[in-house]
Image (cartoon, rainbow over all chains, first blue to last red; front, top):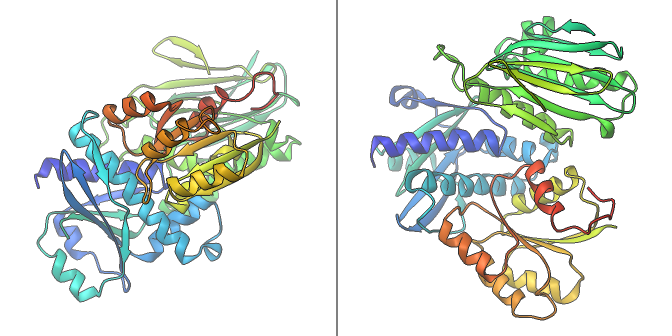
Length: 152
Length: 159
Length: 130
């Protein structure tokens, strides 16, 4: 995973958050990301893509961010958002982010197939172990952490 | 025609047919206008920053500094003049890249993103936009006709 | 005149977003049907009158490409306009879908303004709508 492609992923993620979810994200460098406290509960959303490139991409964040995304998209109040709506909003965010990332990387010629995103709630310690030392993108999205990585 | 100049972090509403609302130097700032063609009332705000959480105290003193409180407040004020939301024509300009100031990360894009959120929440269509790039814009709203002109580098066009 | 719309996407969020975008765009709506995959969409089309279909491409059970092929092969549905809304921007895919008879191709995320401009091309002229 090159630094260029991580930069593209970071920029694409920030643009998708702005244009789709109406949220503002700030990139975090490795030191800042290392200081990022893991939320008590983690939602991990992943999909696989194939075609000109193939890999599994995953997005990890706190449920509160997923709920905020759903609040913005459904135009409902926070207490009206169901867990299903929040989870689905996060999956759709990953879907759009991945599509935009792949085309930013490879242009409009190649075809990609994206699997349906799957959401899990991993154990915090397992999550920290799996993600430690892996190339990743970390963002601060209006006070909430969002991490993107590959092959997890 | 009398020009009512709107400074940065400020706004105005007018129902005077001999007036035009004008704001200058829209770089990364956002110039937002609402116009009611039925009552011939117009409103304009010049907002600098996206989120008031940056400075809640300032947001109380100068709400139009921030898109997230300024644009809803502008909407509220024009509706208070008797306009109906469904009659309003919404147009926006600015949101350019902040040249020479690397600390303002994507400030133009962020102003526009927060503006879009407010439009979405209020079920408002944006009927004209001239945003982005790395240029400075001047915006002028003619209250009698609703004509909105954007001037940049000496070239004027209607929005 | 108000329209019956069918939105086909495996994401609940995407379907809700498109439905609300249509409202904001001022499209007069009689009924909005939703389906999570191409097969369910065909089931709706068999039962209900639909004026316009929005479809994603990547969906389980039956994807958007196959849905459009089946619609165009059926005399009952072949005239219904289809607008694709997808993350897939590949020119090959766009050409493939235009070849099977898609009217328009939009990439996510869409805005009400873009949707309105696209839908207006397929609504009845002089209907007074949008």
